[in-house]
Image (cartoon, rainbow, N blue to C red):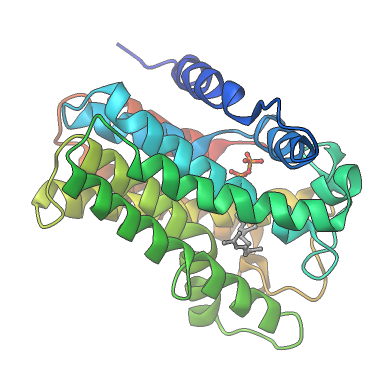
Length: 286
Ligand code: GRG
């Protein structure tokens, strides 16, 4: 039976949206502006790629949705915290995000900075308080998430990205940039799904899941570069994949990575959803 991946994504997003929606309500006066800014960003129509991976890898390896849900939320709130910070004037200085004014335009720069900070911390609270996994698993998830986010993860990748504003990057550095800035959090989403299902981090299943994550993570970025170029949104100072190859070569490169991702997991029963998801990421148009 063929998979309707859009239906699978919308089912997962409905679960995630419901779980996140209530989290940013408060009767606390004054502080409510902070939670409003968080809610504004988290509930503004993101694709929810990362929590989809967390839920699906948990299901693939026989785990329950409840165990994966707080971990998926954690990855999604970190992702949103990074987008808030990324849009700030000191970073990419973007006034718009997902077709709406960026958080700092809607709530002011200081509130946006603080909303990003609070979301980042909230992710670790969610992991620590996940009652549907063993405490040792929650601890492992926290470590995975912190590593994927910090110096040698997303933040490190952002530093290479900023360096790239004034320097030409070679191909290996471009790969490193994206592996850290985007790939590390996608990897964490997959790893947390495995951990929620009780998969050991030294197992073959975990290693294959990581291989899938690595290859779809890079595919995700190559397709982003292609879509930006088509929309005329390529920043001239940035080194992109299209500085090294034509659009069709870049697509073939991404297709090859997608094949590798699929090969890593196809032997597992029930992997058809994740196979369809890898193909969706390759062929997406937004
Ligand atoms: C908050 C710890 C912390 C760090 C901030 C600014 C920064 C450091 C890092 C930048 C990270 C960043 C913006 C990476 C780009 C990731 C990316 C490909 C974003 C787009 O992801 P989609 O398409 O977005 O999944 P949606 O809108 O669908 O959620």
